[in-house]
Every structure is written in C-alpha cells, then in structure tokens.
Amino acid sequence: QVQLGESGGGLVQAGGSLRLSCAASGRTFSSNTMAWFRQAPGKEREFVAAISWWSRGGTSYADSVKGRFTISRDNTKNTGYLQMNSLKPEDTAVYYCAASRAMLPTDPAAFPSWGQGTQVTVSS
Image (cartoon, rainbow, N blue to C red; front, side, top):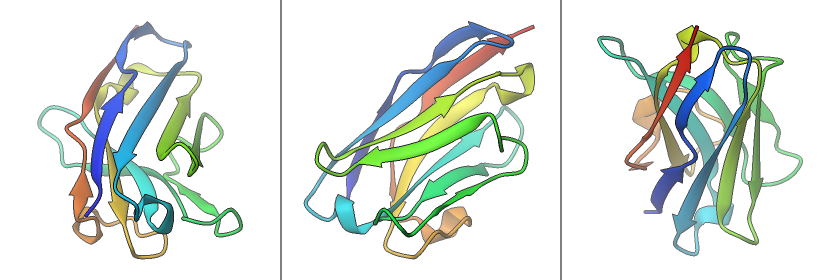
C-alpha cells in the first residue's frame, strides 16, 4: 500500500482559493489512481476528484466541483494536488487523499490507502 499525508487546509472566505497537497511514500504511487474525497460533519464521505496514474488516463470530477477544482499530480515528486478556486461554504469539510490500483474509481471502498485528512473551512 501507499502511505499518504495531506496538507494545505485552512480557513478561507467564500470566493477564495486553497491548494491541497498529498505527499505519498512508496514506489507504487506512480501506478495508482489518486483521488480526493471530503467529509462534512454528519455526512458520508463523498468523491471530489480523481486522476489516473498516467498522463493520458484522464481525470474525473464530482459535478459540485467541476469548473472550480483542478486535480493534478507530479509523479517525480510523489505528490498530488487539488487546486480549489471559487470556494463556497458548502465546500467546508475534512479533505482526504486516497490511492487505488483501479482506473478512476469513485467509490471509497475501491481505495485501500488513505491519508489522515486536512480541514478546509469556508466562511460566508
């Protein structure tokens, strides 16, 4: 499995931006789909975005973040990113990165590797 650790969360006003990072350890990171999920208090963990392990494999986004969030990765640095623009109060949640050998899954059950999460709070 891949070990993951998120950073970059914080408090931001509505309309602002944040960039989350996900640092991975393990030689297999470059062959994994990397994804971001989020979980708000009292709600289930939900899919945000995913990126395949190779450059032409594509990306996938939840409808709620399309056009505002961008997922990317740098396999040479074993790091993934989530650029979040035009943030809304409803984006407030703990954000988790996850890794899977499957191709662009969106079900949390398909991801065996998870980070500890980073809090994102968007004030109105």
